[in-house]
Image (cartoon, rainbow over all chains, first blue to last red; front, side):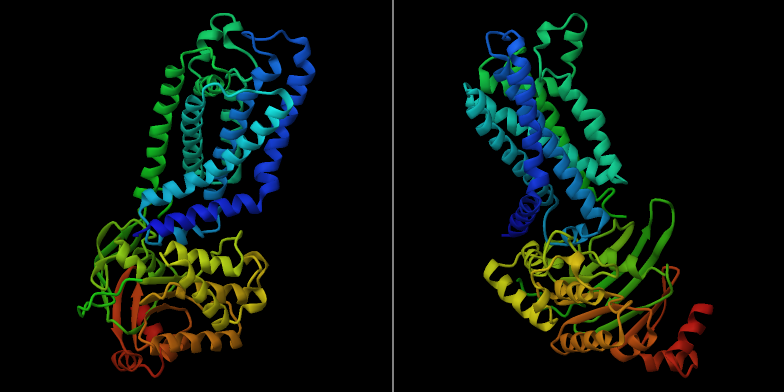
Length: 254
Length: 247
């Protein structure tokens, strides 16, 4: 059982932290995303024609769920690791008899737990409010898995490199949120004029939103295989980067 | 918990240990040191001498530039060796989200303890360090003395065979210092090897069987307190320290 109990307890610790801070970690993002659905979907949605045959209030739900989940996965790991470094209790984990891969996995699972809790809550509310379907559950599961690993790993890397809280929030506010907004959460990029439609295809969040939308609605602006492929192609190196940082000790050990 | 090998390997052995930090600062240079199993060993030196660097190298908390660290004959990077080490750091580094009980329980989990065993051990530690009244209080709400006790309890939680105490009584009052000394002495009497760093010379003299003096990352002397006094021709350990560090 070398290190496996440690992995279990580290994962438990990360989920305990999320549960103890549930108003900040789960409730706040759920409320925020619900407001988007209510304001953009149910209010403005009446004035917007359906997109690709899908009602606007249903169309925006996959993107909003994606946005909330990836932000949570990123923010969770960036904050928990930066806090552990800042208060130096990360030493209790680094000195423990765990393999680096177990530490990486434990932190990643914590981010996934928080994001998943938000995603499930939003999904249930969206079913009640707008009746969003799940037409391709396998694609949805794959898209969510790759997307959350990507952003939880990014959070891990930033949490390890950050010198201040500002650094962790900077990436969220300046990179992730804008990419999500221009990634087709609120519109179909097919509606954009050239070259913005083509430029959108270089946005990694666009592909993740498309993959999740395909999972929910059975349609997307690009092939599901391309969308999943791009997301996976980013998730794997991001996870390996986080893993390498724990293995090498860079920025974690002097 | 796995047993240490039956071989007479020292509790701790440093072979040519060198640590050069990324900014070029030399923390320790070609340090050789052996601490026998069951010893109470003191590491003395001024700020920046390399004491914490040595401890960090033993506990896998720095990237060693060169050399080898063995714990009961096992490389310190191995998971077996890490099972055998308990560390109480100089700075209070408690998880702010966990209560006293959770701090101990989760530490036991990180170190591979079964839940039932860990829960029993938490009760023992809470008893030993008189933390009952604060068992369900999170670390930031503890007093300085309670945090120091919790740090020590956490280091002992997984029943390590080598306990490393980095200035464990820094900033604590006289009463607590006496309590901690008594606890540490009892641990040693039970066969635990203890490596202690301290700025308090009377603490080193009162507790340690052997003392190593380090300066500028190098070992400059090693002996019992009596041996050091004789070697340096000093009446007190303070006199030894002043002469050794001035050379």
